[in-house]
Length: 224
Image (cartoon, rainbow, N blue to C red; front, side):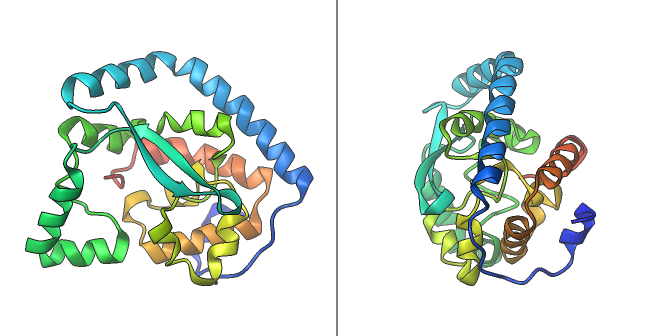
């Protein structure tokens, strides 16, 4: 891959095998080093997010959402809770009374004006601070620093022939979806990016994505 811009072209959904063992081992070693360093360096920020979430939004501090990962393994993906405790009911009522929102949800599995998100949760989402606990998922081995967007069982059913591409990689805290539009990326585009990443993976590609992540998070309004 010569440039991240290559990923903006249409990408076919393809079946791929798992990366070679030496590639997986080297990527895993880098993941552990970066995750441990991140936890140590960001410990004060993690503590602030924890306290703010506890004070501003009654309920559990961490949200554990079931995701499908490497080789089809199911795991609890961690994040600071950004939604109200009655989030499922809020979503149901909103989709029933708002056909535009229902269509948006059916297409992208996301809502720009999500009634479930709390005030502090919206700030955490825009800054991506809600995803910091996923550093612990990386340590555990469920996730990678860079990889496909973690998906639910329901979302995986929309991957058709790209399922093997998704299973070939550990889901990432960041990835091509993060630097290529985040929440504004359509679901089909996200699937295409996951396929592209699985086929083109290299340490150089990971480094490019990491370097592009900081401006994407700090200077973009595409997260919600």
